[in-house]
Length: 412
Image (cartoon, rainbow, N blue to C red; front, side, top):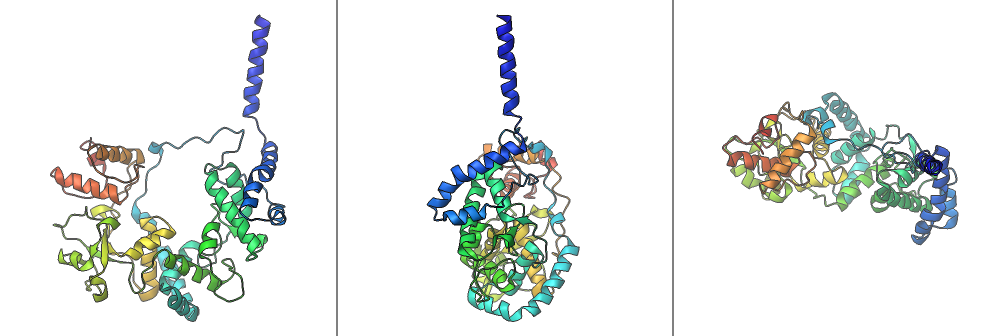
């Protein structure tokens, strides 16, 4: 009996060891089986030919250096605890040296590509400086190295990443791009996250928004400047860009006006904001054409940083990258390119040093009190900021609309 028990334990131990002892060669073999038995039927159903599928994966290899991988047979990656990650101060996002450099290059390229940019604005209604700002931010005006063969990236992540379904969809989209003949696979390069070419489009975005603007019969966002710029403009246009409108204005919000009024769902005519005493920090009046149109308050650092009235176009920019700071970066860079504007005048305070777990606890406390904080994720989005401001005001505190360590004990 003892010998039988010992043998059983040895057998179980060996099986357990095998289950977590897969080699890279084992995984490579599983990958090839997955391509043929799992991915191919889906690709075929979507309209990809067998010849195209075979050619697309002939030289594809798994890239083991990519982040966020979960290879089969390997221990699962450890989840990062909320308490280990702090969100940074918004001010760190706006490197003045970088913005000045991008603006100088952008102004030069605005002149060099003036006729193309004018034609783009006539076609899509998006101003050249906005298009140039996104081009500069995404790929350094096409000069940044785009290192990875995109099929390697997408295949690796579709097979063994922590978000395989997302990349599986993008991999199928990439197959359709190759079959269209717009680009050869050797030229189809992108980032480690699967974003391609000078505009940094995912393959699904390429299929929806990329355009042939130079008339050569191909949508080429890797080598063609006109195609790259027009594709960015087409993307923004299809997402709802309102021609003739600005992206937004830096403002001063008077002390008697609550900062807890921000967000796209609390839009009102810009004239109404002006009627509350909110004015542009430059001292200029809001453009007359903007006064009757909708505007939204934006205070990304609460009362600890620059304050804005933004237009719906601000949220269109966010469709490119869902971040308030990204959209502000693009707007500020576009203003620098267009008119030589400088940095935001409001100073970013020393915020952003709290642990995400602390912000998460504050969000949960606000939710328990009936407030809508949006996503409970430890990051202070506009719903968290304005809910915090409302709570501060109702409890006799000066509304700052931003989480701070001094509020942790009070908000329980």
